[in-house]
Length: 124
Image 1 (spheres, rainbow, N blue to C red):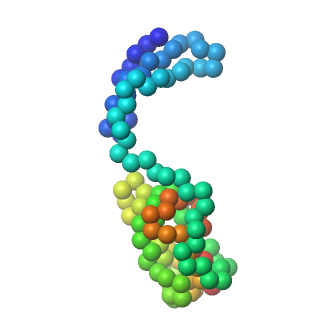
Image 2 (image 1 turned 60 degrees about the horizontal axis):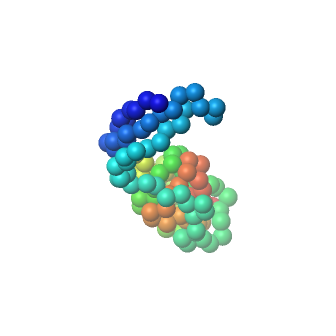
C-alpha cells in the first residue's frame, strides 16, 4: 500500500492505493475537502414555455448550466442571434440561432444542468 496526497481543483485528498488488486488499483479517500459545487444531473429538462415545437433545433454545444434565456416564444431571430446563454467552466457561452426564424419553444429553464447536444429550443 502507498499513501498519496492529491489536490484536485483546490480540494486536497489523502488516498491509500493498494497495489496488485485483482480489479486494479483501489483508491480510498481518507480526508476529503468539500467540493465547491457539484453539478446536478438533469435527466430531462421540463419545457418552460412549449408551444408547438418547431422544426429547427437549437442544441447546446457544450455541457453546462442554463445561465440566461435571451429570447421567449414568439420572438423573431436572425441567424447568429443569441437564443439562450449557457455557463460552462465559468464562461458565458451564447447558443445562437442556426438560421432565421421564430422561436417556437424553449425547452429549458434558467439553472438547468444540460449536456452537450441537449435540445434547448426550437424555431419555425
